[in-house]
Amino acid sequence: MKYVYLLSAVNDPYHKLLKNVSDGGDLHDSHLHCGKFDTSKIIIKILSILLFIIFSFYPHKGITSNLNTFNIPNNSNSNCKKISSYNEIDTLTYFKEIGDKSIMKKFPKKWNISVYQATSHNDSINERKFYKITNYYKSIKGIKIKNIHNYRKILGKGQIVSLDLIHRFFKNEKIYEYIKSIKSIENDEGLPSIITSIDILVFKDNKIHNKLNIYYEKNYSYAVSYKLGYFDKNGVLYYKIFETDEVETLYIKESKDYLLFDGNI
Image 1 (spheres, rainbow, N blue to C red):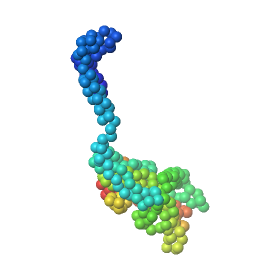
Image 2: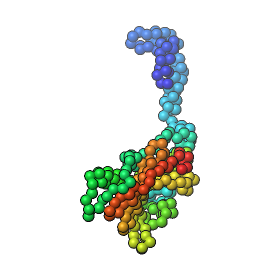
Image 3: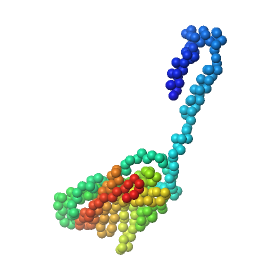
Image 4: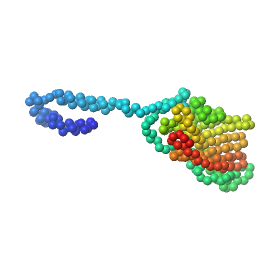
């Protein structure tokens, strides 16, 4: 806008008269000496430029009028955290992927892992592949959540030992949180079991709306149960269930789940 004004000013007949006095222009000849010089027009033009500059840098309220705040459980010492978000258009079109995509490959029904007897070459390959995948989920970390009270009912039985926020985003007036938790729970024999999980939590109107489990490792004294999932950008969860003990690893089943942007499963 500033440049348009300057160009129009140059083409203005009156402005053409305001040439440098030293070059013998019309201002020197026709205005100063002929008494036709009108200072009011100069003042008006200067004021218009000043007003334009002021309004160019003035913050307009309309820019932030579409912002709302939503209260959700968070990792601070307070119970809720306010997150600013636009309530008209959500630009996010895909979910954040999480999990090991190689879980979608084929696995044998079982393979031997016993250290007390010889294992085949294929068993060794399968165990190395399986170990690499499970180790990936163990390596996932996030921001430590200090106030775990809000998540106790959501995550179910057991004492929360550790809680991490991996990812969080807003969509369709809902909050999506990727959470990694480690819980301690007593089994039927009174012995402690450690359960590590990764879940996607969906909050609506400050309440839990849905929960999708991506991964778990249930470590008992005699065996370990695994759910290994890959959650893709379209909201499709591919997962497989395994059980392993001191002798062998069993591939139990595979299945799919879906999470929609409306928060439903």
